[in-house]
Length: 307
Length: 269
Image (tube, rainbow over all chains, first blue to last red; front, side):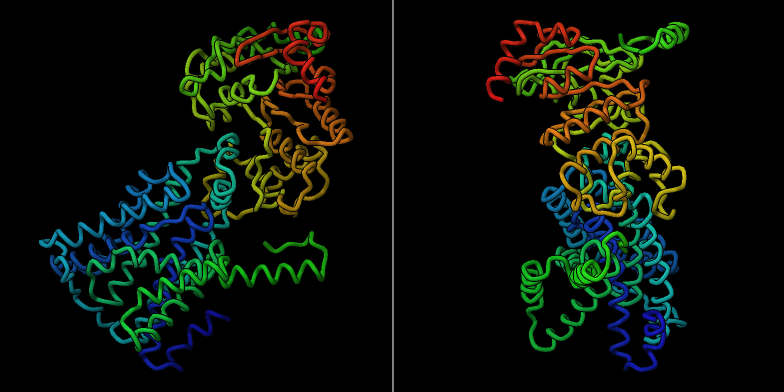
């Protein structure tokens, strides 16, 4: 039903709104990639903006600066993002909690620094301009459909991933690493695989973003990118995966609404973060699930659970 | 005294490759900076034996378990399991060798259901743990194994309950079921009856008695009446060092142990 609604959307909405929804879809993928780690493995990353942005940089550098094919560029971007996630993972998986957060933050800052200073390749503060979308997805509606066709199976893949036996091992690691080790699990290996897969999905989001925005600059890889994507996951509900769509929609709509009045978006973002952490730390979908579960356990026996 | 019937002993003797000793600790020490939590402990556990490790608080019992399971690798000495040097092996590979444990402080996956806890316990040694897109839930074989382990530990039909909703006693039973699920050869029980009521302790003792004879069990327990009725052999530690060992009857009569352990424990109890 949701898919059907999404399918007819361009017919009823003006093109600007269609492009906002397209943006929501792209950032939902990034938010879900963070949720795989934050919600299931209990590892909150602040480096995913950098992974996302590196994918964009590589795709634009390949297609614009080197004049290569855009699709190969995007593939290379995803590859680079996945490889970068591998490096991040190798350094960060042995930590948890605030140390994991700070380490991924620091790694993201390094990427940002490189993008800012390596002017010859990245264009420094000016960033890089892309070559534009291929003709067949040039208009808003057809690009929207292209994104939808990619995001739908990606979402299904991530959904299967977190509900697979492997996904269960991540939740086990979140609850008790020591028990997992004593049961025979190589905990760092599972976290590494999860991080790399998560990086792959963030990379795909970065590739779509190239087509969407046609421009990349250090602000694409900077900390606020990671923070806002994480906030999307939190707003929707960490550990719900699909909540990311709700969170991305809320944050992006808010951003669009706010920017009509003020340029202080980062401040508003910060305030939103604080308010959500205080009043709804389980997020919109998380809260809805809680209420639903409570109602269900009141009306029926608790032995029939849906989770 | 250890491996049950004479026929079983004979069979073991016939299998020349398999040594009679399943767990061998040689001069094992674990130091945290200046503190020697475990100091030069040597012990042998026979296949199928029921062994208790006793000693006052801070005697190094749990640290010894951690050295055997690899959570804290020994800083000196050597640990051998089934003829294999495992001194430097990481915990998950020791688990793959057939070493399983319970924790003194209940260590489960509280946000998951009992069934999911059992699935994690069962998949630890199978390739299914890497199934990225496979469907969740137990396979038929796993369900049988899970049911068997749950029946052994006498946890009732609570498969769909969240672990955080179980009573403390039920959590202790799940703790045991999860350690039993993968079919271990060596089971390390760290105070399985800790915090339980006298009635629940009797159940735990029954559970331990009813475990398959081929599982070697090493047990840490403070309740002397419970422990001495369960095991063939007792090792007593004090201040990280080996103090004495013997059959339960000898331990009861040992004046030194009475002093450092039984005497104190009885006075406090």
